[in-house]
Length: 170
Length: 309
Image (tube, each protein chain N blue to C red):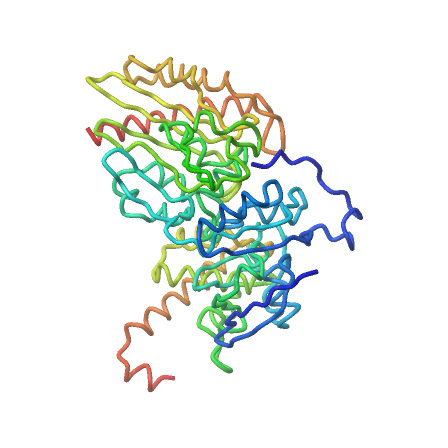
C-alpha cells in the first residue's frame, strides 16, 4: 500500500502526515491529528456535522480526501476560541441555547462563521439558507438562527467600534 | 461516464463491514492539463477525473465506483473562467456552482443560470462542486443538464488526441452515462450568448432545500412580434437521463405565448417523461409536476424575454 506525504496548516499550525490516498480529510483530522471536535454524522455529505474551512471556504470534510487538502490551510472548531475566550459564535450558541445534544454544533458554527464572512448582516432567511447544508435534529433551528444573529451583531459591532474602545473592553 | 449504479454492496462485503471507507486507489494531482490527458490515455479505463469531488467521492465511499486511479484537476489553472464572446457564454469546466451563481455576467444577463446554480445542493456543495464535474457525472436528477438542453448548450471535451464539441442533445445518453470518452476531460460548457428578446428560466421542485430535484424544468423562449420564435425545454429527474421535451417545443413554436399554450406544452412534456415511482412520489404525481414546472418556467422565461426586448 502506497502512502502520500502531505503537509497542511491546521488552525495556524503546520502538520504533516503520510496517508493513504483513500483517507478522508475528516479521518485525518480526527484519527491522525486527534482533533475530534469535527464530527462525523451521516458520512454521505448530507448533514454538515463535519464542516470545516479549507482555504477559507466551508467544506464537508467527509467528502474530501486528505490528499486533496495537501498544501491547504484548514480551520476547525478547535481553532475558533481565543485561549479561554470563546469565539462570539460559540458564546452566542451558549447564550441563545443554540444546541441541545451538541452533535451538529461544531459544523454549524464553522458554517455560520463562513456565512458571516460572506454576509456580515444576514436576514433570518439568509441565515437559514446559509446553514441549509447542516442538519440539526434537536433544536428546530430557531435558537441556532438567534445565536448566529447575536454573533453577527457582535462581530459587526466589534468591526465598526473605534480601536480604543475595543481595546479597553477586551 | 459511469456505467450506472450497478451494485450496492451488502453489509459485510467490504472490509470491516464499513461501507463508508473508500476502497484503495492511486491518486495523482498533475500540474498541467497535458499531463492529465497523457495519464488518461495511458491508463484508459482505470483512471477517473476528480474535480470538486461532491459527486464522485460519495460514489466511491458507497463503492458504487471503484476507480484504480484518481486524477485530481485541482492544480490545473485556467479551467474556471466565465467569459462572454461575440457568440457564446463560455464557462470553464472547473467553475464552481458558486462562481456561476455570483459572477457579474450571469447576474446581469443569465438569470436562469443564477437561479439554477443557487439551488444546487447546499452552500458547501456549491463552494466545491463544479459544473464540469456535475455534467460529466450526469446524475439523472441533476440540474445543469436541463439548462444545457433547453438553451442549446455544447460540451467541449479534450483528450490527448484533440478537442471535440458535443451538442447537449446528444450528450446525456443514460443514467450516469454520457458521450464523453474515458480519455477526455470536460474543459468547457459553451452556451449561446443571450440575444435580445430571449428569456429562460429554471424551476425545480424539491422535497426540501438541497435535495435532488423531484423534477426540474428549464425553459428557453425567443419572442418576435408577439410570437414564439424558438423554444427549448429541458427536463430532469423524470427519466433515465435528462431529456429535451421536443413535443412541448413544437407545441410552442410560431404561436403566441399564452397560458393555454404553456398548459399544452406542459402536458406534452409530462407525456414525454418516463418517471419512476420512488421516495419522491408516484408516477402520476411526477408527471403532473413536470407539467406544472413547465408552465411556471415558461411564464418566467416569457417575462424575461419581454423585459430584455
